[in-house]
Length: 163
Image (cartoon, rainbow, N blue to C red; front, side, top):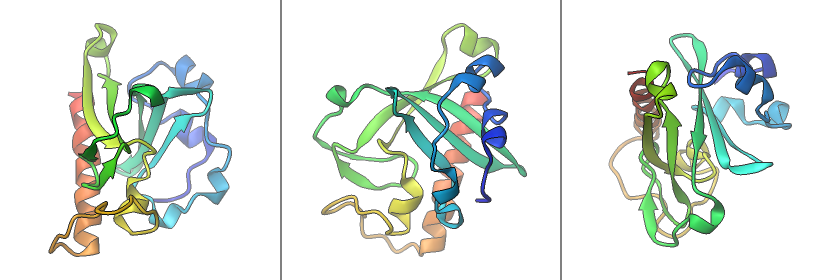
């Protein structure tokens, strides 16, 4: 993924108003992100941990989603698998819910998926971040195939939000 600017990120959101996108908290460490190893940029709002954001480059342009998840107290300590990167965690997967784009979202319709709580899927897939014992399931897929699967899963989630 190419490095994104704050402007790129704020204009990428598909399921919130321009005003909401203008007010959201962008990561302060954008320049330090491992851009070459990211399939998408994901982060939690440090001032409101139940809010999370995901920005990915699809069709040659950044596309972003506003997400909601339960607070840290609601995370369960059972082993779960992220639906994006297929990494297994104990207590490190959360249900992330995105309001649908357009009129459906304004009516309160949402789409949800279980995702890595820290949205660091790209780093787990590449072995740059440790999900703990049993975090990576044994698979016969190559690293490139796992990366492609993660990208496809993110694109499918965004398509559900836009549908």
